Length: 339
Ligand code: ZN
Image 1 (cartoon, rainbow, N blue to C red):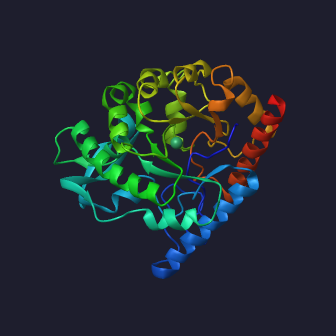
Image 2: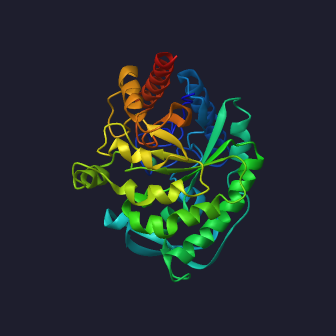
Image 3: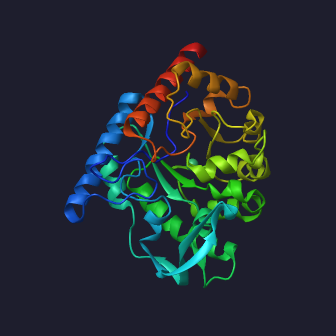
């Protein structure tokens, strides 16, 4: 009961990439870089075990960015053809690469990473992939003609990848869909159906992570514009609850998300964000337990997995370790209270 897990990303050590940056440069190259990625993954798996995290991730040490780490290995994308796009409903304007022909994988993308990480731990292992809608909100389309059509093409290659990750012994595959909160109606209309396609046939757990983003300036300003109640989840949680996706990771601690929206996910495991990733202040175990206690009004403890609000990539290593330990200790405190 109350098995702990993380949203996904963890900070890169300063010898691997520039620290505390969302788009860092690698510090090494070639074989040295590959070894350093493995070493960093080993460190984070053990840090999570020491912190009492039951279902660990590799911390996304092999990829610079959560979407581009996948797209780098996909045919049909012209990286020279940059298109100016206001992504996440114009929250940031960026020059993005462009899909110019039918997409396909160049080969297995994350299998080596998953096999290596699986060998490091007997804890549960989660592996994260970008979701189809979020990919389509991060790359321009000059081939498919509509977002749902391009999303379906990505869902199909994500499914190929997910099945291979499952075969490496991964226990949960999570699709990251921060774009759902920027386009809540489209998420219900077609985003959830694309997720089901991406997860089709999986026997391991399937999950979706939907948050209000890393604690960077553009997101903090966006959150301030959303008012005193953030009700985006309300638009698409019913569609997720009716879907084949097994778990939902959501933002909760220090946010304006009304707790009762978790009541819309009665058929699902709920990964309750009990750690705020937008501040360096480390929660106390009592604060983590208080967040879980409030969530328990709407989620049975059997279906609840204490988690972080989002990835912790842009934080310092020390802060991230502190927050992992607070999460583990807070969940342990809550389990003792329940007994
Ligand atoms: Zn997130």
